[in-house]
Length: 234
Image: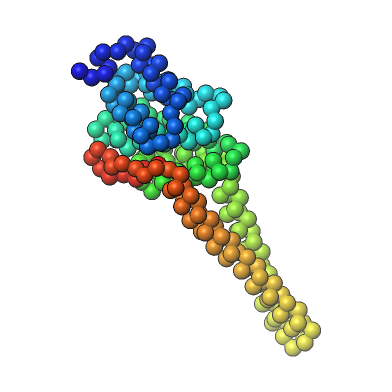
């Protein structure tokens, strides 16, 4: 006999509420939560409501929100094919968590969240429309990626403008020794600018690599899904 046949609805609500308020980021804790969700799926509306209620608590910390994202990922991965109703019930929570978590003032939280979103993009656990919305929410609330892209583009545009000016100067004043010295300095400035632009991208690649390594140490290794291998966030 399944659990949902022997305990009343109010007790199920209390059990899942207590679990969420005391859960941690360990693999065992997250997997046990998912197992209870599947065992009590006759109370799915109660369970999903409690989860969304917890996620929307006004004073919930960003760390707790990240743990909720780990939980949602585990539930979605384990129910995607065998329990589609559970999958659909927990799907909306992802958008809510990303929206709240991306507003955090803690740069480490934002970095970790970005890595999780990148993994969502890679594993394609979510459909494309939801994934697009989640990326837009993150970018809107952080503004980091757009600002970096615009800054780099402006620098490169400035470099191109200066280079065009240098070429015109070379045609008009080619025989002038003093102008040659000016052109030589200008070219040196252009090369310095180009090196800074290239260095920016190199530093970003290095930073992303280090952040992924850091994230992989923070999040426990995953367990295979019931019917199809999937990459887990912890």
